[in-house]
Structures are given as structure tokens and as C-alpha cells.
Length: 193
Image (cartoon, rainbow, N blue to C red):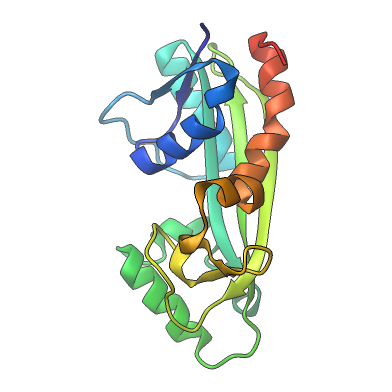
């Protein structure tokens, strides 16, 4: 059974990607404990590549990484690649963004996810991107990581925090990126369709 290391120390993200990859028959593992990779890229794709290549080279295994963020139109695309560093905690990040938006009627936004697959030598061999469009709510609706509670997805009729795992896989940026990456993943790892 091929091994795929998820280049993340975030157990929520590893579990979500593991669930998306369950049907592949891969043995999905989390990156080695204590590993911190500084995200120095200027784009989601650069950060995903950096993480995948580092983890693949360190473990000698196939590695999958993603990088994602929230882009708000009225904020010129911010917080974007700095979404996780916009403030120290999820609560503070949400508060800052809502304060910056104020009463603006322009509340369009999108979650963007880039994924990179690196071979055991540490070379990126396949990449994909997924986008989920929505609106920034005026106050949180539900509980979830990151900006999930203030991001309303029209197609789902609810906030990202209230979406089921199935809806997240179907409509969410990570689910879309994973589906776009799947054919290349199967090809490179020699998996059956």
C-alpha cells in the first residue's frame, strides 16, 4: 500500500484530507511531529510546493500539501496568503476582518486552496487549485476553524462552519482542489481508478 504523508501539523486538515483520500487505498500519515515549515511563498501554490517538497525530502515518501486562504474583494484580496497570520487567534482574525469591513455592502469573497504533490525525492510533480465563492457575514454563524463561521456559501445556503463534511468535499475549495489533483495523484502513485 503506497504511503502518502500530509505535509501539515494541523490534525483537522490531516483528517479532512485523509477522509477525501479514503477511497484511494493509500496509507495516509501526518508529517513528523515537531516539524515547522515557514511559509515564505508569495502565493498559495508556492507555499504548498515548499511544504510538500520539504516533507517528501525529509521522509523519503510521497507528500501532499495544501495552502489556503480567504480573499475578500472589498479588502483587495486580503487577508489572502496571510490569512492564518492576520491575527494571533481565529477569534481575533475574524474580529479584525469584520471590523475592517464595517458596514460595507461589498462582502464578496472566496476561499482558495492550492495543492502540491511531491515525489519521495522532494520534487513537485503535480499541482491543482480549488475555489469556493461566498459572502462575508456580518457576524459569526456556527463554530469552526479559521474564517468558517463568517463565510456564507450560497450554494449550500449556510456558513462554511455549518456545512456537512460531504458539502465541504463537494463545494469547498479544499474538496475542489483534491478532486482536481486526484487524476495526477492516481497516475503518479500507480493507483487503480
